[in-house]
Image (tube, rainbow over all chains, first blue to last red; front, side, top):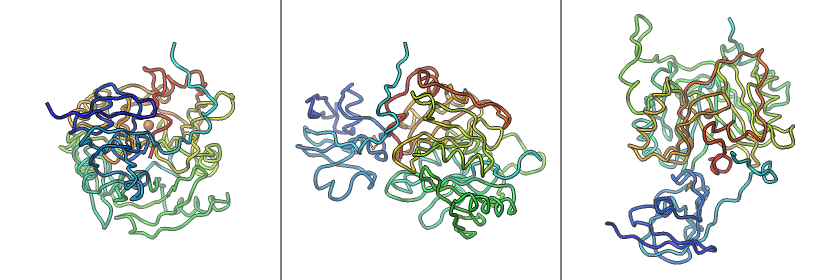
Length: 111
Length: 308
Ligand code: FES
Ligand SMILES: [Fe+2]
């Protein structure tokens, strides 16, 4: 059993256990956790962007379109490319949503 | 001859996070054939494509699409279409032969959705490796990785898709095959356009942010090959977005997945044959779910919000 850390997602405060050898996003998906949007899982689309408020971690390659050097210094990372090395407290910081034609339209659900 | 002017999508240049990792993914997992390399780019084609390349990967540190190119039937068509574009008010730029390996002069222009589109007439015929006399039906490359037959179509995200439709139909000879209408009953959310008898060569979804890529699609031969692709994706821990399933639009069978830079790609099979004299098919907003994902009957969150 690899080490698992607890990741808490603010503001809701939902928490999930994330294995040290998995990305934060992967850990969330594996434990049916919630709070961060899942996109490409490959560091390219930006929807899983978070700010790490406390804790330590390592990162793998991320799109420079969503994580600048300044972002990195401020703890802004893509959660699909971030690996916990301690318990983490994070907050979602997704790229701004821009789907104007649908903002007013409820997506229909199947019966 | 039935087909003149714009023949087919011929190349897409994709931005990748790391060229070596992307080359490994497209060679071994997607199963494209690598045909060349220059300073910051790697060139690939599907096993049954005959022109030098269709997919170009560029080391960019980010994901997305640089440009999408269509092959036209002749140099005369290229000159004529450039003139038609200029008369329509579109500014074009000529990119010299050889800028892309084994490729002739290209005419590049920006469309209202913010995408860079190209036309070109010449690219070296390297063949599919099976020769032009008494060829076998397939080669070893047809079984390596997912091994698509060819790059097939793309879905692009951006604003002003009615202007895009007018440009593609009035100037470039495309026709509308299907569309999805928003709740107002008038404005299109999405359009599928063809320059051939394929159900689509390019499609657009209305999106505030310009110039974005939803997916580039690779053609497979059968539904069984789509299931084989799904197995290979799981064996290689590929990030799957949706599927295997069917699209209501075009009736194609499909998987949406992401490459290791976050660019979505599709492994696609089927879809009906279409003709320019056919009436377009309309999907209403109430049925947008089955239009896109026929079995789930609803959009997933990623369909409208995840693109590169
Ligand atoms: S899910 Fe796309 S960047 Fe993390
Ligand atoms: Fe597609």
